[in-house]
Image (cartoon, rainbow, N blue to C red; front, side, top):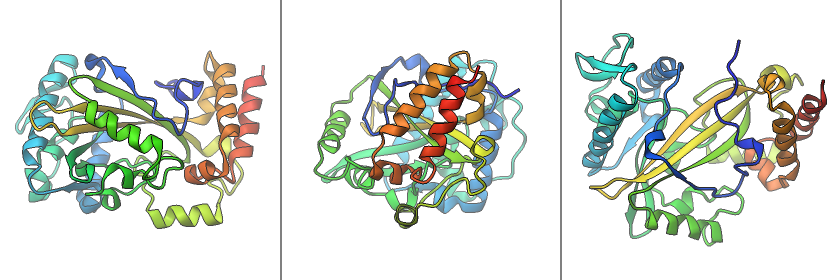
Length: 309
């Protein structure tokens, strides 16, 4: 039986299109569950097939990448001693099969080694004259964006397509100030959306986003939302690295069938909150989330779920 969701930010605790950063207990920085080995296998597949789309780095970031790896190894060993051990190439998940070597560029990149220990994607942000920009990243599981398109760009440009978060907006200024003010503490936030199917690799270019916003295709052309809809929850964390002073942005993807909410003990509360938040989205927000054509059907399904039984 499919497990119940680990996180349910659609209960109202994390509203869409808000910053929503909250303090994070460092002991809960990284999440590991029974999907660890399948997630890592999918990362290796993507590295082998489309490495140029899922890993980027600026020259001069290798020391910061190594800092990430050096933070992760002792944390994972202490937090999850039954999950990680030492193999021929150093620390690795217990039970991980022997894998073919990656390309020389990937094998030499510490951020890639770090990414192959955890289910999270790992992004490095660095302060420059234009603000905080994306200088390195392992993004195997994008939620409707393109790593290559965002590479090297400052935060305000990265967030430009998000309604209300573009350059010059108050949220954009707040985010920059939060990045500047982040010190030893870690913070987290949640984001969520609906997708068709359970693909972890879910990219979207800016041109594709514009096309979707113009034509508004349904993600469920056969109409069977209950059979194909998955809730995609992003758990995001931010922490400033103590040596480089770069900011490490982690993104952990959780995928849950929408239908699993029907047997959740808080089914009514979750479904009603979920439906209410979808109904509150304006047209620009629906277009950004790709739910313009499906929102009403999703709300009907959720309301039925809330009131059934």
